[in-house]
Amino acid sequence: MLNNKPFSQACENNREPILTVLQRVFADRRRVLEVGSGTGQHAVYFAPRMPHLVWQTADLPDNHPGINSWIDDCPANNLYRPLALNADQRPWSMNGYQPDALFTANTCHIMSWSSVEHLFAELGTLLEQDAVLAIYGPFNYQGNYTSESNARFDQWLKQMAPHQGIRDFEAVDRLAQQIGFMLVEDNPMPANNRLLVWHKKLI
Image 1: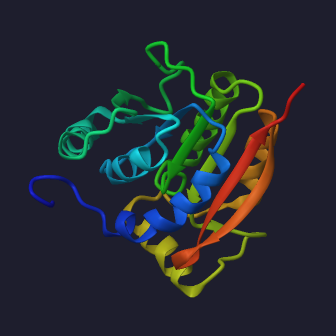
Image 2 (image 1 turned 60 degrees about the vertical axis):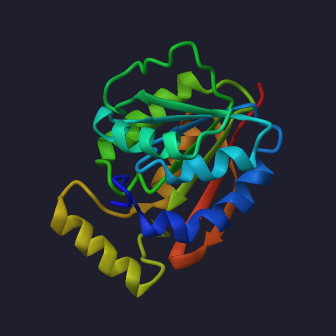
């Protein structure tokens, strides 16, 4: 906690490299939905640095006080307070908000695999043609860890909760393809993470 606000050192460490990519891939976006806003640190950092778009936070209700405390201390005209969102409770209640882009960080390895599947299924109906999807986090490739630190992290995750674990890039990409998204970028990030970017194909 930082001044009664939740604090993630990882968010502080990765925000600059993530922002560099998002400023490019979200350059023509207008309405972003952030799924799993967590502490709220990413939202308050990214929104004012991309003033051309609206940044809508969203997370489980238990995380809303922390997100709101960050927004209270770092308000921005284009930053919206969190929607209550649970990947497993569909359809999502968006209060009329129609995003043309989605960002989520460090969520796929925390959620169960069935919840990841539900997330993508919902995105298939929520995100319209020409939408952009950006997902940050660690991924395995062809079933292999990309580093020893990721292997240790995966073991720690599974010890904490059996449903958690680093996901295979190929499995996540298949879910994206099934809802009409095509991978356009696989960006290497610090600490053996990736920032994957998909674009929903135009019919």
